Figure 1 (cartoon, rainbow, N blue to C red):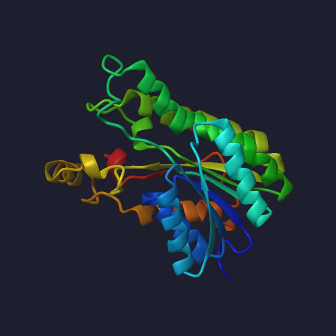
Figure 2: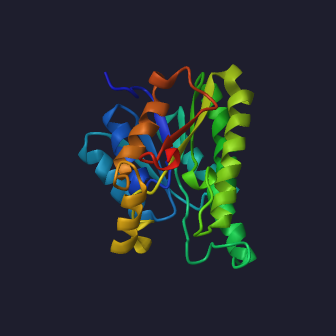
Figure 3: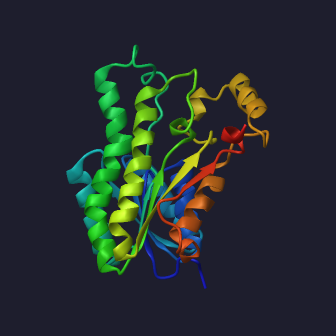
Length: 253
């Protein structure tokens, strides 16, 4: 039997990178997947990728920073699959050219970065938790970052603030909803080779990261998605309010 047999999982930002890998992995393990993304074409490609591994997925398109869009996407997924058990808040933005030090970042860009990386989780949990309750419990997975655990000379202060906020929100959700058998845990990835990072990962920067990471390389999307699979499954049934750092040993140094 699959590790997620009978479960329905919502994955935000599932159109590419870690989200797409998670959609494939979850589907291989028996989950039906609600693919949420702002890019309709990318969402459709993920649905096709899930079908290619024998799974079932439904594409929903919208801006996760907007409550109306999130409510509509969740309703569409429930309409298709009839239940919801996993909320994987994977979507995020990393705009190194717009999000820098507090001295340099424009207020409008600060608001947009925080809306996508933090406020979106408010909307997803607000509209998703009632369905997890009806299902008798479930798993909420938040995507933090090592940026929330350590300072960096290359400042991205809006991103860092948003990811730090997720840590506190995750603990609050874990305590609030434990009585409903709803768990909430945070994954803190290090640098990952995704389309979001690709524009910034020059050969020189790749070498710099590899030299500073004990395992000697940056992560592949599947390595983060595999941790999300564990948290989505009943194998992590006694974990809530936890933070899992997946950074190749970077923050241990």
